[in-house]
Image (cartoon, rainbow, N blue to C red; front, side, top):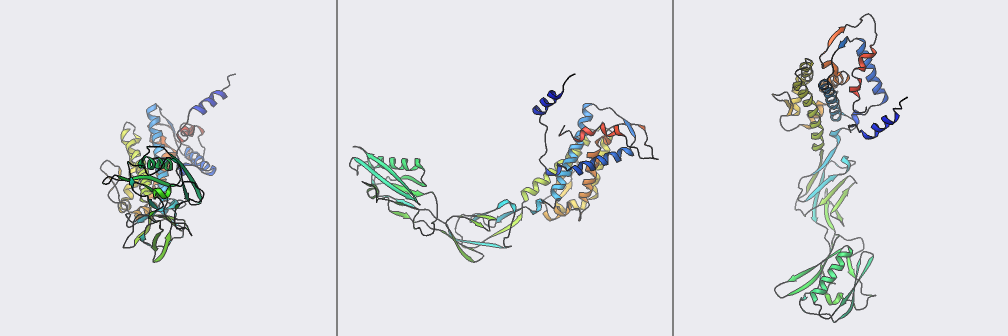
Amino acid sequence: MLNLDNVYNYYQTHIVAPKTSSRFNSHKKNDLKNVYNSMVKQTTHSPLYKFSFPDSTQAYAIGIKEAAMSLESGSNSLGSFDDSVFEQYVAVSSNEKVLYANLKGGDPGDLPDQLSIKVDSLATGQTNVGTYLPSGETSFPPGDYSLGIAVGKKQYTFNLTVHRGDTNIDIQRSLASSINSNEIGVRANIRNNRVDGTSALVLRSNSVGLEEGENAIFRFDESHLSNDISSILGIDHVAVAPSNASFLINGTPHTSNSNRISLNHAIDVDLLSASSEPVSVSLRPDQNKISGKLNDFMDSYNQLVDIAKNNRQQQGASRLLRDISSVTRRNQQALSSAGLTIDDDGHLTRSGEINSDELRTLFDDNLSSFRKDISRIAEKMTLNPIDYVDKVIVTYPNTRGAYPNPYYASRYSGLLFNDYA
């Protein structure tokens, strides 16, 4: 006897069916049971049909089912109270040249209703500029030299051998290359004065601000080094001292050793420049997410319209178009208030700026009939896409009793699970 287990396992591992990522298309056991019961109820009162099922008709029926499922999923994503897209906020700065605000995780948390931030000064780093030495001359006798740099609590030592003929700029470049390649949190470069032919070694800290009790980000340690080179280079001269950011939040003064501050661990604010006037930070619904969910919903609706128009050879296509269009006709005023309209081709489009409050009302079961209508028509199309396929009635149902037809559902039950089978 032929063992089909290996064949099944082969195709199971080599064929990956497309899966939707929407949580609204994931069902519990009771949900699937309700679908089954609905199918049984429908077969009880349905005539027995005869129809052909070529590839084009299968694609047509599957398209109806898939678009209807997406339509219902899109409606749920805009109307869900458990994870409402309208409850996902973004932080908006009234002047993004002064500060930029970013809400962590889309949750406002325990933040005040009004946030006003005035930036007095930014946190700055430390810059040391060495003595300008004649670039083409030699200020260092041949020999071994050392340079010790302390960055925070870490100590770094750089050793340098000066050979006869090495110029000042050669030595400066060699030290700069060694410091940069070791990535100690200090960046080195050469500053040239082309007028008098001199050059100086410049060191800048990567970080800004000062830790508590500190007055410098980096310093030079000469205590344990022999033949230290820092004094000859003059690099211990602090040209720009580090400082902390100073700002006011709702009139209360604050300081920070960083130009990025966190408010109640809910909002990150990047301070970009000082300002003479306060900048307000407000929380608003994430329009990008709302727009994305709305586009998904509109695409599913328009896909059903296109399926009906592109399959006019099916007599049921006109009924499909009528069913989906009836939903928008009945709710035309609510759609218009939300900024949506139906164009000349029957497609759902945006008529202008989307009104978030009206859009939220549009998909609220308790405030609008639109979502209920969508759910009703989507369930009908998902449960029985064959209803829109051309067919011939063979027998009418027995109206005296309730006798489900077990073969009725089997003709199209695979259509309901084509993503998983």
